[in-house]
Image (cartoon, rainbow over all chains, first blue to last red; front, side, top):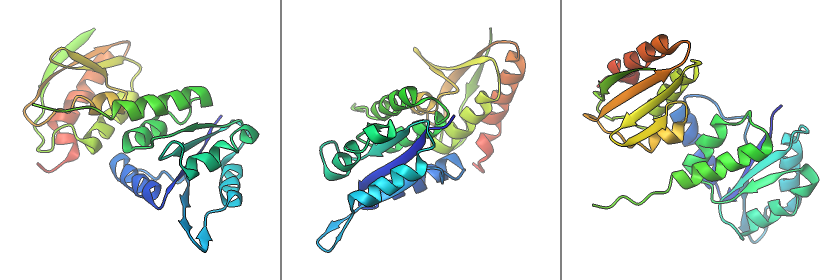
Length: 129
Length: 89
């Protein structure tokens, strides 16, 4: 059993996070598919590109999509397609969330999505003297 | 349950890569392993738990292990700290 994991972010933010996570963890995270969201006039990321990525990782155990900003186009594009893939989306991707997801990637979708959200939140703390 | 005191001696402390190594090591044992820093205790098999300790060089910790292979687990964890998580300094 394995949930398919996709990252969709503005620009190459998601790829940079993947590269850093690979360095920290000392292993390849190439099971995670990344889709850069482009919106630059002629060269726009299409719904078909997002759909192709989701379909590619969907092996029947559901998909988890990690996106950067709630309410923004990458999240909105993914949200429209979750139902067809029995998927879940977690917004607010950060490095803590990504490392946590990789750690728990063998968990079923519901649990994995909760771990993602929880891991992301645990990475945000105020340090003040 | 057994436990041991340990002090972080590698220059970068329990940073991300070191935490990842520690979690990998801990995950290889059946025993429940906790790392205690002052009043806080985290699961040694949870990378976010370990990272949130934010433990720098010189920090004193207690490692607790509880389970069938607790002695091997504790020995392996102590060896990692002593080896500076494989780092040069």
